[in-house]
Amino acid sequence: MAKSRFEYVRDFEESDAVMKQCFIVLRIDGSNFHRFSDKHGFVKPNDERALLANRAAHGVMQIMPDCTIAYGQSDEYSFVLRPDTTVHGRRRQKLVSLAVSKFTAVYQFYWAHFFPETALLYPPAFDGRLVLYPSDKILRDYLAWRQVDCHINNLYNTTFHSLIQKQGLTASESEKRLSKTLSKEKNEILFQLGINYNDEKDIFKKGSVLIGAENRKENEGEIDLWEAQSSEESKHLQKRQVLVLHVDIIKDPFWQRYPNLLLPLEEVKKARKRQLQTDCNKKNNEYLFILVFYHALVFVILDFNIIRKSKTQKRANALYYCSSSRQAHLNMKILDSDHRSIQLYFHISIRPRALRQLGAACHLPYHQF
Ligand code: ATP
Ligand code: ATP
Ligand code: MG
Ligand code: MG
Image 1 (cartoon, protein in one colour):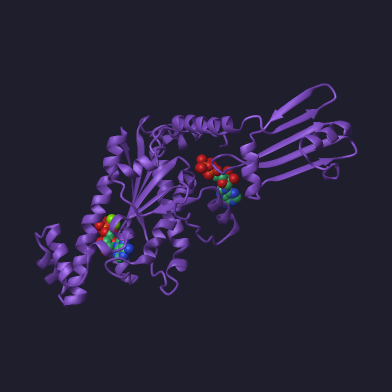
Image 2 (cartoon, rainbow, N blue to C red):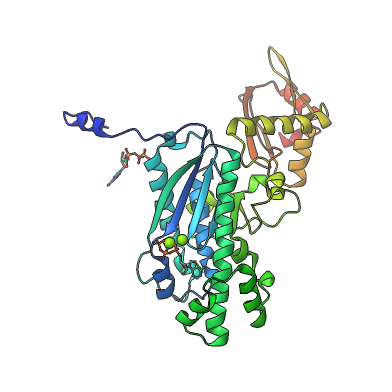
């Protein structure tokens, strides 16, 4: 920022970094969405095109790498950031405004894709807030609170709209009929109308859970490959792929399946290192590159497991090239155990004889150099 005599006004800005070591939750909620959903002809009680909100939430996860889990239902979405995140200096207003503006922008950007037959009549707005949660337990209770809210509202809305659609009741008659009823009675009303609430779709009964695809276990559901409207967007989508689940996050099994979600960053790094070490130990010393330089003999030991994995996935790209000036470029792309691509680039002076030795060590014919 350019220096000027007016710069002193900056001191009027207050620091709003939030307390350390607490989970940061950013919650976004559609403003007056009851009206918005009516005006845009959302199917009641649940319109599947509202999956657009999941796409918008992915947009927020793209710009918040420390957001490990997001939970959405109805017109709201909660984003959980790791307790030791330092993103944007943990500044409250920066985080809330970024999350809300990105969510709103993506929602509008992809409107036509999800609602091809409905013109956007006016721009939607969302509000946002930031709440701190000091422990795993309270954070889990927060998410449980939102999922229970989803269940209660969805059971009510499903019954309310079924009475209107199937029994011809007016809205106020339906409201009266449901007044002071318990879950069991709502289930019975639905049953009489030929609906088994258990058969309703999980996306509406449980809401949507977004987690980074790096947490994906083998044989798990497909990663949601959203279509991008530009190559720039597509690059972003590749960078942070997410898994969209419609599962229970109140009970323990979910958290046992994804144990890394609530760990501090430091712990995640340690856990990844331990995993890599275990993988390497299994196959250690199975692949050996010997590079002979003018003055030194260098052994480079690469984990065979990594090389083999990358080869079978046909993603490995090894390019050896030696120019007349006796410069060698070794450019390799390998995948680490989390399937992230690592680029290795060596630029070395090398004797042709040494290069032949390198080729022999790599079991590559000389002409590939
Ligand atoms: P931060 O996320 O911290 O706000 P920033 O990159 O947005 O980072 P700013 O201090 O907000 O940083 O600076 C805005 C920058 O945007 C300017 O330095 C300038 O490069 C660019 N910019 C803003 N308006 C224009 C414009 N009309 N034409 C060209 N460039 C612009
Ligand atoms: P506020 O501005 O206070 O948040 P609101 O009208 O947005 O008011 P909410 O309690 O947030 O009130 O309720 C959101 C409303 O959005 C629901 O009552 C429902 O009518 C509508 N809605 C949200 N998602 C869907 C959907 N997928 N299908 C149909 N309607 C939906
Ligand atoms: Mg709302
Ligand atoms: Mg709401």
